[in-house]
Length: 439
Image (cartoon, rainbow, N blue to C red; front, side, top):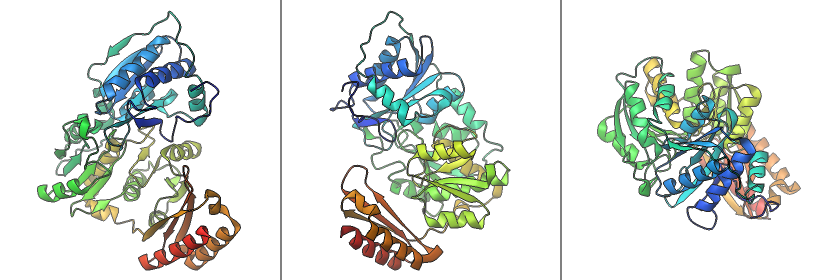
């Protein structure tokens, strides 16, 4: 790639791909870190590098450390820690920049690189584009930074998490699925120190099996474990522990919309919910918005992606937001999604109210949702006949349902999503609209 080539590396959450493949190589990690160091830092500044458990992680972390050091920045290698631990290191002033080597919920052969700038926030599109444009700048200079392995790297982050716990979680039994990822080093210990009785599964830190039949994208094993251990709930994290989904005592799944509602009402109860407002994406179920309205809370809706949730939170001064996937941002304590912080918040709400997770999550009654993928030019999503058809269907649904059309960002595909009071009605509306989109 040359400095003037089209932007193609950074996605919605950093650079991601097959480790050692055509794109995500040690060479790229070195050049990306060097470019980021030149753009965001200066000699003598400190960078924190963390990773998940994937076999390719040490290689990519070492290459990135060399890139930062080559442009004069000092590097702390934190080892295996959750993504929010790196963000916290920057936000707390322990580091000036952060880099995480992780592909989140992707399978083990993949990996990724995501950067945190000043304040512990992810970078803007414009800054990422500038970093990408500088990839081919020669590595020259005599001011070389130092690289060190940080001791007890997880402890400051653990202390930060535990400082959010107002009362012991005594009496609560939780099964935590660590996805064989970064949560393995943090999550069970955090919940135990907070006072809960903890059963940890998929917590060996075997990166060759990260997210393999476990974690936030595969809840079946967690459901079985909760029932087998008679636990009050189960919490599932993804590979880099920035997400959290849950299972109640009956084995029923509690999704990100429900967890967001639980966290929002927990903040409201303590007077910490700024402007009585929650931020969610357009993919949150209408049942979530209806539940928040019943509780007297406003909902700000954003495009899909945690960066858009965070942008809206910062712009409006809001304290909580998140996605249906379980990526929740609690801005009073974190600058990015934090799965363990989410888990602790939910556990505290249970302990403080004496309610079960099923009772707390029951505030959200999800509407049946149908999603149909239509092979069509992406422009069909805004074609006049499609817009007219959508308006007609929405008028018939009234406030009891909704329609969302989303063109794919990568292929000739339009996604038709419909929510309605019954599954039959949602399917009928979705099929009619799919026919119009297909032409």
